[in-house]
Length: 584
Image (cartoon, rainbow, N blue to C red; front, side):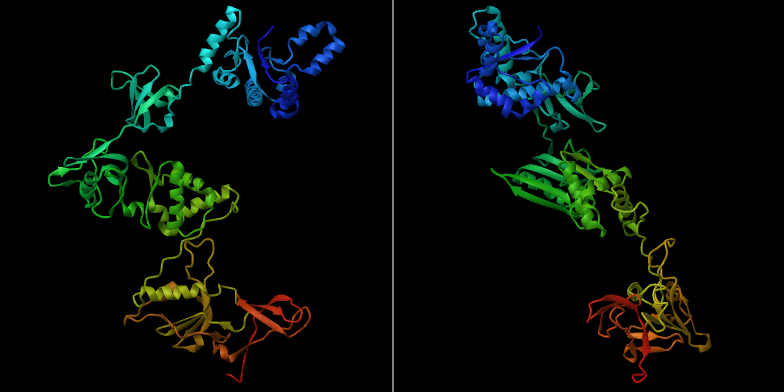
């Protein structure tokens, strides 16, 4: 025989049949899998009359009814399509729900399929609308009425709404299904339930999922000299209080927070005490308070250490959950370091920092917080840059061979120049062409002139550097013309170690310095210098149309970037300079 779910409609069976076979997308899919629902309609009776007239009376009694076989396994087409029984059962329930919305339906209580072997209680509630669509209450057969009463009692009973264990905190009390109350405690950063008379009788909170029917929130307190307030949340770094959120009567909250704002936990022989906070200290300065009035004299106050939490160089990330914590991390990345980073992969950067133990866990209540080890910002954010590059490589945003930017070289120490003057020299070098960029030019622009005891240096190319250099912009191998003021025959072109030159000081206290007025100057191969007004640029004709109507847009790295006015051709040509003898 098997297990069946019998159902009927009080509407026109032909309309219900048309909906099932032509409009209900889920049932149409079930038809492909040979698991569809059907109601006996006029078309079925016509077929019986034409082909099996002897069965017409029996089939006529089935008009407007249907039966769904739920036992005996699934059809081959269903298994081939990769569906299991749970998938099909849920699809049946969806079809029944659609029928209930559009038509008046009834489901026979005597159906063997209305059983937990075939449908869950929740699914049977959905099919029968919590038992209200069951048929069989007024049956003349006692066993049908008995089955109806049992099933109706089961399906009409309100479902227990269990407490979501994810909202529970340390100190909360929970009520179980047997009406007993238990207390949640935290041990080794895991929540456990105290279940026995002994102090070590605990079970993990995870074991109580779908068993907790109510809970009482634990509200910790803090007090000072008779004043008390509720602690909403707090953050401690070791024993140092960084953040405290309170609610309570305005006068009491002000009394407690005023002490802490002064960098103290004790005044007038009275201490700020809390069993939840335990022993704690505060910073001597930098404590701030924000307070909002609620109603009936109640206020909400937040007390925090500003340098750690909100100033420009803050290092403590705060959030109500992990998502807010990562939003705070995104803000920190924007404010604390200058490099671009892929904002869609902030979570990956955060996880990398955590894996490298650069995120320090803090003691918290009812809030999420971590402290960033600010050593990641040392040496121009080298460690942080390395992590960002690693994430970019993993996501395919950059080449696997990409390397972190080198840290800028420290400024050389000079006993003759100030730090600002040395910085000015390096700023000038960074804006100049790099080594080998001007090697084809006979007359080269001078970017920097250094003069001092016995020597003058005309620097035309700054140090390009190489991958093996420890630092960026070391400037130990710049190129230029070196004038020996004692013996001009010894003057020559060569490499110039700028840091070494700036560190030289004679016994009389003199050293080398930058000539700030040496601008727009050029030098030829013999060391002769010229002002730009004494020179003329030689611009060749357009290589395409030979026109001499050429416009120079910019000059970069020893090349003119040109465009032809006549034909529009865009091209570049090497800078060629000649001395204007009349001007000279």
